[in-house]
Image (cartoon, rainbow, N blue to C red; front, side):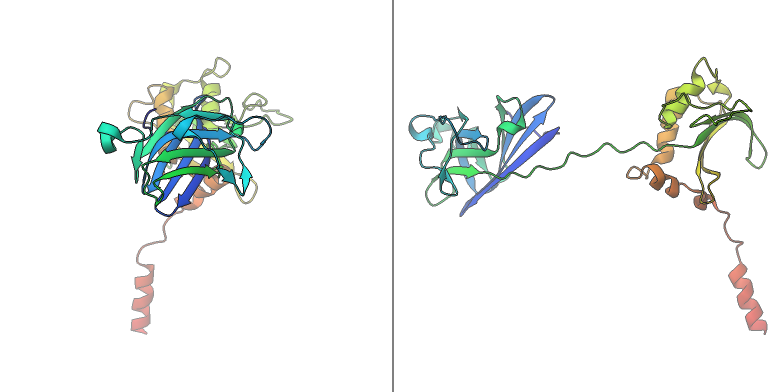
Length: 303
């Protein structure tokens, strides 16, 4: 048993509440192993044993002898059939008092390793506890119908219609010399435009890998800037944003990828077309000439 703050791959959350005591049990998988976090939300209890099972009540029930049994525990009036029972400690705080490992007060969490192969094995969770803050001084708590929080999805990588690895730009910043790479090869392709290999996802890391491949032979040290394109409202490609190379150029691919991540900072929750909208040319629109409003006001006063 250990105390931990898990980053679960998947989980089930059970709750239990009576007068004077409330707790939460989070059963979860982490890196292929299974655990139960028992957290007291209100009150206190000495967790002496845990019981669990699936929602099939057929077959014999696991049980512990003496004061650790769950005899009489029911769920909506139906006797519970337990698949597993695990003793954690003997009743009574003993010489350790409130420092006993299994004694939990408000805010405390006890983590217990579970010998199971799947979360599907646990639909009902039971706790046998003594030295509780309830009037009876002990509980045979039974919880079912767990919440199953949705696993967070990895943010979707933004995709681009084409990327320009620019070596030469005009004084006004227009791309002049370098390598354009399209997301798909046009058909027909009379000008021999470079495009990502068929089936390649058009995310920047893949554009960069293709640019540096033997097929393209791109020279990263010569790149002065990288320009990203998406589809505009008129259906034609438009620049979304660009990355300028530091003085001396990009030293390696990792440095360029880091600069790309920095360029996306603040748009972590956006993906796909949402990101393209956030980084559209509207963000780079030329500001209105300063003083226009003041001029109108002066003309009005003169009038």
